[in-house]
Image (cartoon, rainbow, N blue to C red; front, side, top):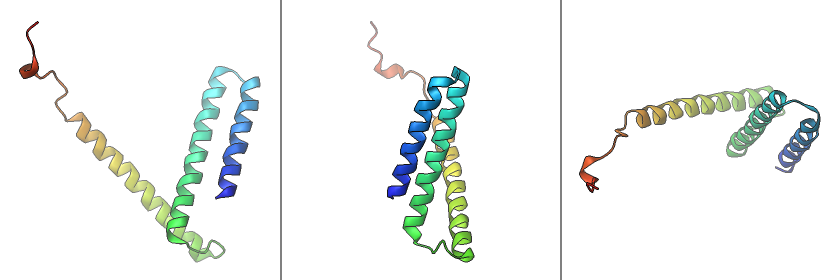
Length: 101
């Protein structure tokens, strides 16, 4: 877990240095890439901690990758379900609560 925080600190320091030299559009790209890297690190660490597979063997790595991509697929499916549910809600004004002012 310490190495993950170390990588996050390195990414943040890199971004701070890069912000001194780049234009605004490059800053957005750097922030987007750093968010993706941090998300990948935290999610892979979470999957690894949950399953405790041996990453020194090919079978262990392939099992962790299968679990990770399965988890990632379920994340996108659930995000789609929540978004669909939110879109189908009646977001109009409720006229029964209208005070008539």
